[in-house]
Each structure stands twice: as C-alpha cells, then as structure tokens.
Image 1 (cartoon, helix red, strand yellow):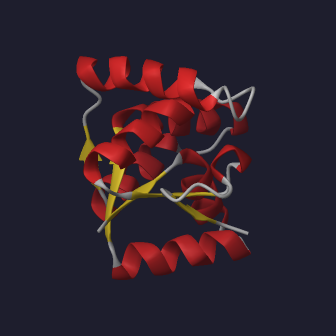
Image 2 (cartoon, rainbow, N blue to C red):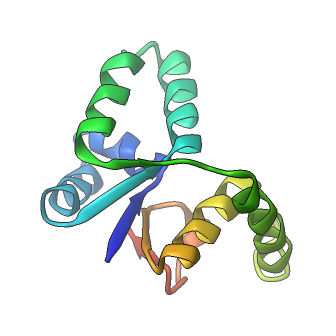
Length: 126
C-alpha cells in the first residue's frame, strides 16, 4: 500500500503538531509518495509564511517518492472533480488530482483536508 502525503499533512509534519506526529509515524513505517503538484503548493505556503522551502522540498524528497502529474492524470482529475462536486460542492482540482492518483494506484491519501473526510481512499488526520 502506498500512502500519498498531501500538502495539509506535510505542513502539519513541518509544524511538528499533534497531527504532524501522526504523519511522521506514517512516513517512518509506510511506503510514501508526494505528487509534484504538492511540491508547488508547499513552495507557495513557504513563501507566504517566509519559511525555507528549499529545505522543506529536500526533506520531502528524502522521505517520499515524487510522483509526476502527467496529462492523462489531469484529464482523470477533471472527471473526478466533476463526480465529487455532486457530493462536496467546493471539491477542488488539486483535491481531485490527489484522489484520482490514489484511485489509480489503489493508494491512500494522508490528509486533514475536510474534503477527504469519510472517503475510503483517505487516512483522515484528526
């Protein structure tokens, strides 16, 4: 089983919060991956918060496999977003790309993002 760590989970990990400690345990015991798109979100967060994004990216790369986001996955994400918006009105494209990749790999998304609460493809942090 592969565990895909999303932006929410990485931010909690870097904060060293209670939820971040749960992420750390998963990183230590499971096969983990991070989408390329998540790296962009991490850099955006780090720039906004004036945090060292280069160190964060280096650590993410050392703790997880970086998965490319190819054109076919974007198309699948668009369909996934359309499907999910019937249940969760503001389900975004970045959430959909994560969910589409998890479904493709039969993986779990590690997140605290409320859009993933009660989804079988998620390990929901709370």
